Structure formats: C-alpha cells, structure tokens
Length: 266
Image 1 (cartoon, one colour):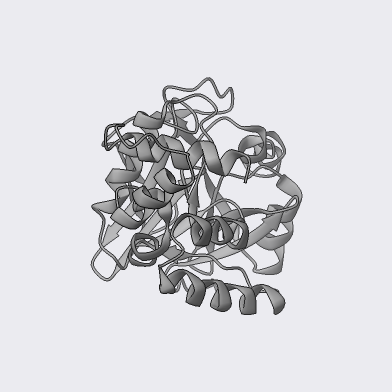
Image 2 (spheres, rainbow, N blue to C red; image 1 turned 45 degrees about the vertical axis):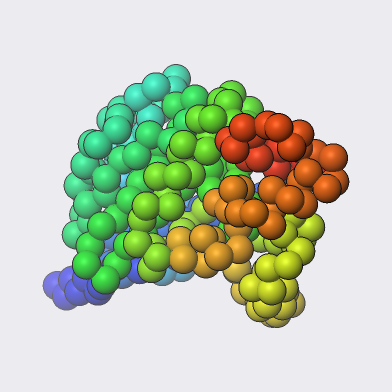
C-alpha cells in the first residue's frame, strides 16, 4: 500500500457563513482546524484535499467559532483544544497562557497567548518557527481593525493587542473574518494623512474583486495601517480631538477607547 507523503505545512482558508474563515493547517495528509463554526465546509475541504482531521483548536466560545465541533467529532474523534477560562462543553484539552500545543499528526507546535477583550477567556495560537511565524488570533485582531468588546474592557483589549505588536513583522495574521475593507475605510477616517492606508485599500479591493481573501495579513502591515495598533500616533489623537471624540485633557490610553467607540457606529 502506498501512503501519502507529508509536505511542508500550509494553511487553507475555508469560507463559512457570510464572512468567516475557518483555518485548516495541513501537510497534505493530516489537518487541524481552527475555530470551526460550521462543520459542513470543513468536511468538504477535508474530502477535496484528501486530508484526515487530527485536531480542533478553538480561540473563544462564540457560536460562529465552535458551532461545528459536535458534528466534526461525529466525523472524527479528535482532541479539542480551547481556552481554560471559558465554558465550552466540547473542549477536552483546556489551555492557558504559555501552554504549548503539540498538534497531533502534524509537525506543529503552537504557543498559547491569553488575549482578553473580545471575550474574557479568549486565547490565540502562535507558531514560532524560524522563518514561519503564524498567529491564529480569532476575533481579537482583524486586518485593519480589532474585535468588539463584548466582555472585556478597552484596557484589556489594548494590552492584548500590545502583545501582538511585540511579534516579528513577518508574523502572518490569520484572523477569523473578512472585515478588511470596512476596517480600512474606518482606518482612513481615523488617520486620513496615512497614505499607506489608501494604498492598502486599493490592494485589498483588487483581491476581493477577484474573489481572493485579504488574509492572512502580517504584523508589519498592521503596525503601519491599523488604527487600533496606532492609537497613540499624534495624527490619530489630533483627529479624534478635532472630531470631538476625545477630550484633549484625557490620558493617553483614552484614545483606544475613543477609537473603539467610534468604530462601533461607523
């Protein structure tokens, strides 16, 4: 019998719902899925690429990230990893800050980061291999934006995003939604003098017109164009004040909360 030969790891975007991406990390033989809110497209992708599911990785408890897990477990009995601080019934391997996940069936180790803000127990998974830095960040960091604060505080979310700022610029950012163009329209309003944002809008618009995902992004690109990672830039602060969205006497950390409040209704 001839068995498939594993290849270098790659990441496949599996679209789901209106704008979710479910991420399949695979070597051409085995695969792990990140945040499978829907089982059907995952099962279809596994079949299309002749992959065997070996693990499920969850970042937080929202239904569009965990809803497909029971059906996937009926399809393949595999370990389910997820945040220790959130009540997710299907999680068999609870994780906390600093844990290292050796993903079954794959030559893949992922370090766990606790990144509260979107939800209180939200975690992210970080691959730290020379030349291949990958971040699976759920709904904390988006291309050009960040997640809504459903449970956490602005201070918590800002501290979580600050952890991403410390990562290498070449870190690939695998966030969970195709929100890029709407986020960048807000970024342009928040920092109108930043020419890199206009350039990025043109680039990402061209991708979407061809049906290509705008993801993954990179930490370097986010540092240059994402207002939530640039909230203390003088141009952003001055703009917030000029628009009446920030008190000139407010402390520096208040600009992040002002941006997030503005984005909620933008």
